[in-house]
Length: 87
Length: 118
Image 1 (cartoon, chains in turn blue, cyan):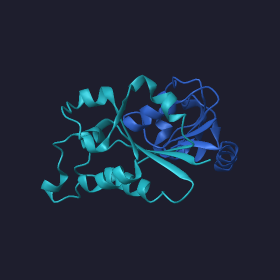
Image 2 (cartoon, helix red, strand yellow):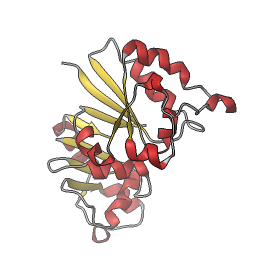
Image 3 (cartoon, helix red, strand yellow):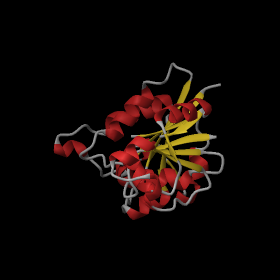
């Protein structure tokens, strides 16, 4: 079970590689500009989340994004749960 | 058991420091319980080429890494489709690089404890 942290948008080749490599059982967390991925459906079987503050800071609301929003505290809980990471 | 860490470089060797930094970081991990590997993908793929010489721009050379790669037997990987896309005709044998298929990147990343993109 890997935690996958995405901090750049869809035009970044590294982030595309991360999203493509995500599998069922992984947790993908979109932080910073990574939240731009959430403007569209994300093709993955992994659970995806976006950081609420980063979404709001970029002028969006929960209705604009396709993934659940979480707080930084929730993000820390996910970090502690996952022993492996791709980031 | 050693922790397996993969450093993934995706930016070009001329104009960014990341190829050298990945190897420098990897070499610094020997002596810990860590088994580092390096993957060069996307624009970083050109670092595998025999002809790539950032030093001609006054930048750090990549060849300074070769004797450490040999000494530590650091595993170096490239992506076959990216080697073709960036027209790397001759791969520098000092890397002893193994090429993996782009479709296998997902499974490959999941073989490691930590994958660090830099």
